[in-house]
Image 1 (cartoon, rainbow, N blue to C red):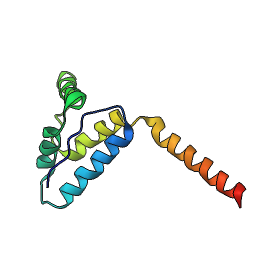
Image 2: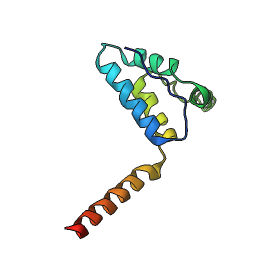
Image 3: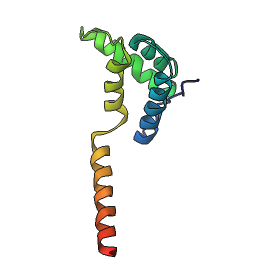
Image 4: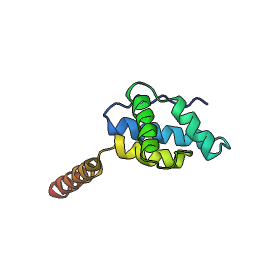
Amino acid sequence: MKIPEFQGRSDPEAYLEWESKIEMVFACHDYTEEEKMKLAIIELSNYAVVWCDQLCVSRRRSRLPELTTWTELRGPMRKRFVPSHYYRDLYQKLQNLTQGNQRMD
């Protein structure tokens, strides 16, 4: 099974799809958290790899612990590639759909 590439486009759905696919691959193998992180980083490209390098440099400069596991990396990645308003916007769309269906009944 191949881990998909992630380029870091500013598309929250692209990130969430990548995260979901990578989690499915990890579920099929007995990787350690450290191996998962290394495998994920290998598949970063374009802006995503630049962002990841910058994150590591920034953490070192701030004397924060190095990220060593997929679980530790996933949080900052989700924060960067899925804007906080994304979930709120999705909820609003769902509300609008639900209200529209209620009016039709």
